[in-house]
Length: 494
Image 1 (spheres, rainbow, N blue to C red):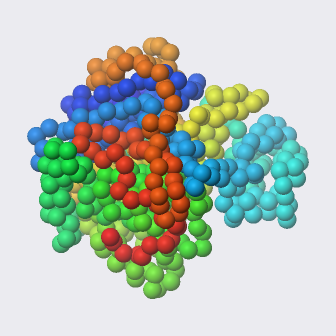
Image 2 (cartoon, one colour):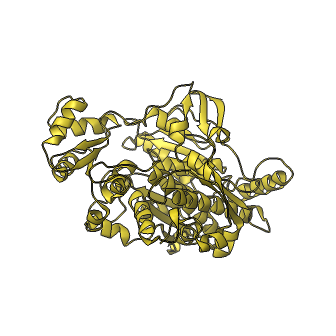
Image 3 (spheres, rainbow, N blue to C red):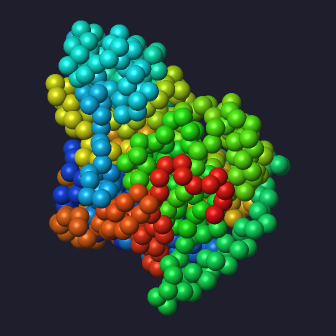
């Protein structure tokens, strides 16, 4: 399957006749890579914007779906939003010193130790009570890559051996990932899963979006397709928060809920926190659990970003959620996919790139490389938001809830599959099908990012940030609210 707008839209179950509503500004030099990263980014953002426009048209009673414009420059800027963020003039903290590639006795591994507990587990696995890069490097150089991978995993840490695409293709997890669709979406069509509308939501939301559409057409408030939709955000790191940040842009009431003992990295939370509120609840405490159940009773969407099965002990499996809240949209994101021997493993974009062979393609087995952005995170995030939006559109028509599942590893497979299938031109530009179906425009240069950045005051300081790339006629151009401190908001709907 090619990384095109048409293939992504088909994976979401979208109506092919809507694809001509999308036009694209191609910018040479955006997200340069050996793999077709620019095309992947364009497709993910494009289908998200089209799904938003489709839902907005339905809820507002518009005769036509608003036109969508995908600008490679805006997309490329947003895909590295964490690099453009400034907080009172300060650049955010990026990867920690122990999150990097390391030489081993027979190759390379990549570790991830940005979070304190992951750093501690890495050091414990290596028998180092404390350690700097020199000590860790010496310990890793004595062992094989696969031994390190398994030893660190057994200790609850994160390290992945560098593999070629061919080595990954022979792995059981690769087979499990490849067997599934890019976007897994199931209708909850059991008898008890029909929509039970919130008494305060759909009618009010429909009125709100209709008024917004009328206002937008005369230069007033923007069309907000997700206005009135309540989203419980149980995600962390980048991909899931990017999805919920996008839903917030489109008018959803997004409440992020985290366990109090493991706070998000502050700068990461700021970058992905636009448009949302943030609270902390300990689901092992009876009082907090009651508050959470009350939030759930009013939710329309639950987005989770934990390992498959990790939340089941709290009664948060899709089946349990739909039993308690019929008509719910449950969106699940994972690193390695919901099936296969690695389904329960923790993972991050950088580690998936290493395991799947992307790091070899972008570099070599002698000196691994990386994509120009954490494109698996950002791309999957926009696909996840698109899947939620399409689920809301379909649910409005048939009265059923939905379960959607995506993974970073499946997005990586999509990228690698597309590269293997290419051959029609450099970087895949000018493929006839995409030109005809998606309205791709001329190839302008990527002329910098300044016009795609904005500044505003916030509770956490003066922010410079990347503007959202999701753009459609009369749609919003920025988030309604800036991010606030992690866990600082009340556990209630706005």
